Image (cartoon, rainbow, N blue to C red):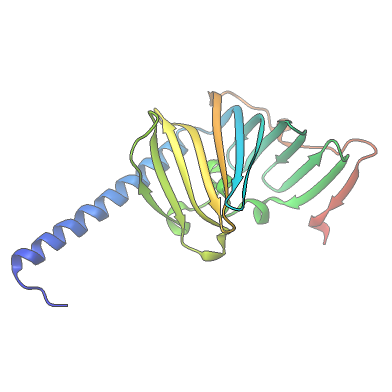
Length: 211
């Protein structure tokens, strides 16, 4: 492709440099938002929809996060399920089935949308970060995974005054998940014991870490 004049070349370089600076600022903004807290707690509403169905699945609950890598995620409706990690192990407890599954935390969380909130992943290495237009009073950022094997197409994160407010992502099968965060508490002290779990007596335990 020919460059017809120095003026055209100048315009192209200006556009490129502006885009590069914009991308850098966007990444720095995201890092600043995510690094502004070490502990986070609140309530969530989760809605899952699919391109193949008009039906949606809605659930609510509470969550607690303590960096690095610790979290507790409680689904309260329409079913009761607890997902807990101490940063090394991850427990999934289905109360109705009285079943506990134990997994390695790293293999379950790394490269997942949750890893972004936990601050357990290198964002610039795994994602291309861009800024979206503000909407609903929130500042939105989009993360597109650089690896096709990530399992999802993109993640969008909405911040209100620098605090996580919404999150949505779409997987490779056309399923969309939207999360609304409310009653947020930033940097309230959370005990480490909150992120440990002991299987209830009589529950079936499937320990995948010993395989």
